[in-house]
Image 1 (cartoon, one colour):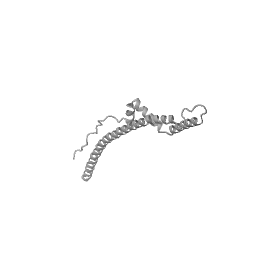
Image 2: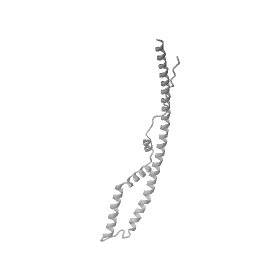
Image 3: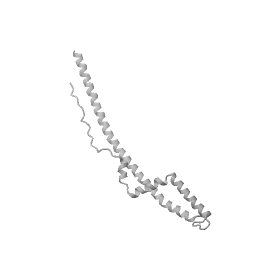
Image 4: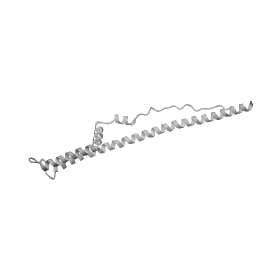
Length: 150
C-alpha cells in the first residue's frame, strides 16, 4: 500500500488586510482636506447656481444703481474678483487631483499585494486538492483490490 502524502497546511504569514481609504484619510493634512473640500464644492451645480446669482445681482445693482456704482460697466472689479477666485481655485483643484492620483496608485499597489496573497493561497488550495485526489484514487484502488480478494 502506498503511503498517502498531504502537503503542510497553508501558513498565513501576512497581516490582515486594511482599508486603504481609512489609512489614507488618517494621513491627510489640513491643506489636503481643504483642497478636497474646495474641489468637491466647486464641482457642483450648487456652486454654479450660487455664483450665477451673485454675478447677476452684482451686474444688476451696478447697472440700475441710483446713487453709487461701486463697479460701473465694464465691471472691472468683478473681473478682478473672478480672476482672483480662479487663481486660487485652479491650484486647489490640481492639488486635490494630484492627491487623488496618489491615492489611486496606493490603492492599485494594495490590490496587487492582495492578488499576490490570493495567488499563494489558491496555489496551496490546489496542491491540497491534488493530494486529496491522489488519496481518493489510492483508497479507491485499495477498495477495488479488497473486493477482488473476497
